Image (cartoon, rainbow, N blue to C red; front, top):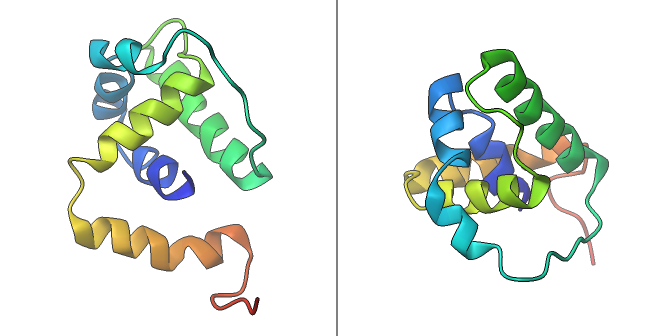
Length: 103
């Protein structure tokens, strides 16, 4: 999920608004919304996306977090593989974790 949200937050304001307002996302949410715990880093990325949307004024009201997560996953479908790999490789630096953790 971190990679998907990290990639979504790199969109420019207009593309971000387009991604989160895609009507197809409504059909992906299901009848019940279930919440899971997220890391502080992931929460920070979501707060940044919400801030960008609020500042741009393109999306009102700001979508719920579940919809942002779905938009992030859907956005990964159009991202080039090298961008996904780059985000994955940059993840340790962004999360403060060592690149290779032992089991």
